[in-house]
Image 1 (tube, rainbow, N blue to C red):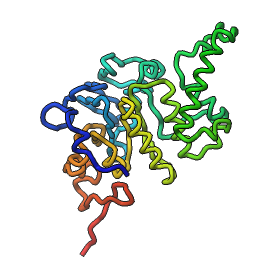
Image 2 (cartoon, one colour):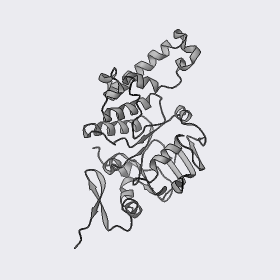
Image 3 (cartoon, one colour):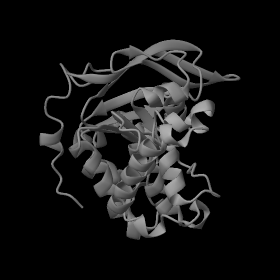
Image 4 (cartoon, rainbow, N blue to C red):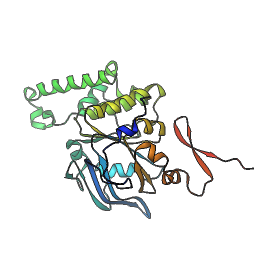
Length: 296
């Protein structure tokens, strides 16, 4: 694991006292009054939220906290009941998912979305934007798009080599392991040269042998100037690679700040365990667990 440098990593990200909705020095996402209800359940109720640019931000919280729903709203995969938000200064309310992707905001999913009956290389090439061959009439004239297609393929091959999937380029995506599919999704996301990469539980279902590789790749995204926002339950991962942590519970942002500060916040302990439980937060194999006190 990388050395714990949370104090230095988080310096200069926020303005003023740390609290839910604290302004950021240079936010890439700004959201106001985002709400989403399903029947009588208000899944998301976020008054104000800012995501810092060129940083790795973790979005954490117990199951049902609204993390993935918020992801879906911010990326255009779902529509909020109320609210407005912007990405890189551009308003996104009402903008569909494919357009937000073209603007530089891409995401992966907890359940991978690789096209199983296409090869790994074909999946990668689909991630490139602005392909001339996608136009029906242009597609009938190969000399108009062949050069661009060759360039896209070379870019895809370089990324596959970087993610150690080059040996699998001709395999069907269905033949990959769960961890390899996560790597493929992340690599495919980079085909569009994104500004912001949003990862929904990148470690879920990943073989421990690939965990360090995924961590290194996430850190590599920041090193290349990208912003990362990810949903995760693995507190060991959150503590070691995040610059900033946002905590949700019952659809609301209840705390945010540098990892070491957030982990000690009573609101975070309450969000995970419930104030009515006589419990402590324990780190069990890298994950937050409930350690109940033995009855006397």
